[in-house]
Length: 458
Image (spheres, one colour):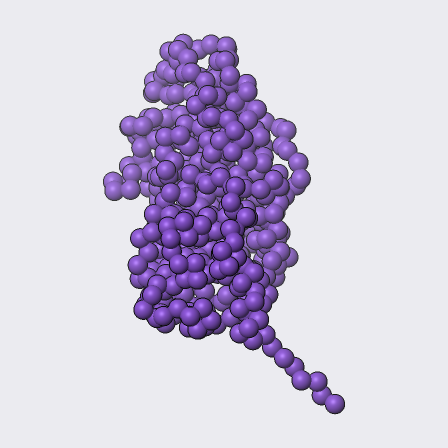
């Protein structure tokens, strides 16, 4: 005799939601009660407060940086502002019970279950919204289905560029170096060494710089994520979950191989041709995998400019950085010890600071012509002229061996660089002229901390 197959019903959904929404019964959400707010929360909460139902506020960013915590903290703020408790609902689409839930029907179901009139606002906080196929389109239908709905969501994937009409996307970056220190109970200004007299070269190391460099090395290996061992967790949840398959990745093993290659060589220059040859993956497939890794906030590509700071008409080469250098340690399970690798990790860390800054990455490039390379060139968005440039080292020989930084000297000869040309060292400060052009040497740890302090999104 055939067995009757049953499926979860509305009462099952309600029971699960009651467990996930303890405030419906007047119980405090202890999961976030004592957790500190990230500096970015002020900007996120301002967007939530202004939500008028025209767009969904979507918080996106790497795994493990505190998006879910921030979502629940926003719920707590809303409840503290005397919003009726039954008008606030949290749902995680990562939970198996909700994987097939029809988002556009959800407001009607919630209103009927909770007895909320269609004339009153209903706040819907959706965690892991990207676990639904075409989640951007479903959010659009959701807003149309209920004009009084206020949607705030978390996505592990960046929304597409064509979804600005119904999505206000906010990017939650990894911790900056400054924020990492604060999480450890260290006031960043207390460990920032005073700038010495940079008019003359000296081998003296300023007080406090050795300690700051030790903290910086800890940061580049383990410091960008909310939880301990968050780097390994970010990799696992982005690559080994259902997300790749839901978003068109047919061969997870090839995606993993690509990520391992990029992570191990963070800061290196690549082309589609060389990657396709190295991994034996079709070029179109490789492009799709790269787009997924960027969408999942595991890596970022930097576009290339020439010596005149002009983009190439046919962009063949590009640089790839991890979103945070700690992902490399999370992958291999150990710290780098050689100077060359730490230099690339320090360079990646500088890129991460721009992710956390108000100026962002949109204007950040690298320059390469012939055998010369300048790792970071920042262009003015309006004029396209370069404002500053950085060359990264994790040693101090560049001061005594100018050949090591000849590319930056040549680039500085061609451009005014009103905000300066910097060589990022391990421990040396120096200012003066090299090859007849102004040049400033400054420790990478100091610059990373200054970016976080001066340009953070507060």
